[in-house]
Length: 164
Image (cartoon, rainbow, N blue to C red; front, top):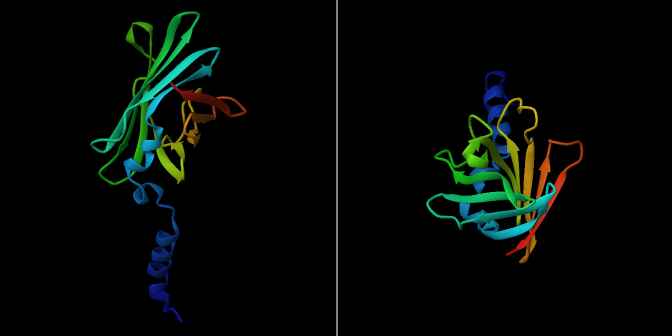
């Protein structure tokens, strides 16, 4: 029988052991399968996404969307493992002329990693209108990268890229 004065600490320890700690279990190198140069069609245009392999506790990348032979949006992308071991995905949109869309980068935390499928969820308590609640990156084979976006529209938006 648990003594009443010990019940709270025992319950707390049990809950902490049960709570998911996805990011602490994984290293940035576990996401190396995202690296590469990827291209496809998205948002009524031609999209490209490029990622450097993990180094120095981070991966960096870029996204570009071209419509009617004009680049209309760029994203600066960063996945990094913080000092607390959590893995965060941060990005910022800029338009032509280097005009930023947001004041601060959008931030998401790795909440699931199973094989070559990573799930990221917003760290914002209440995401701004028009921003993503979360997304997944998945690499089902050597030639495809699938990014699924959640929260901007009612239905998920699926972007399918092939290796360039």
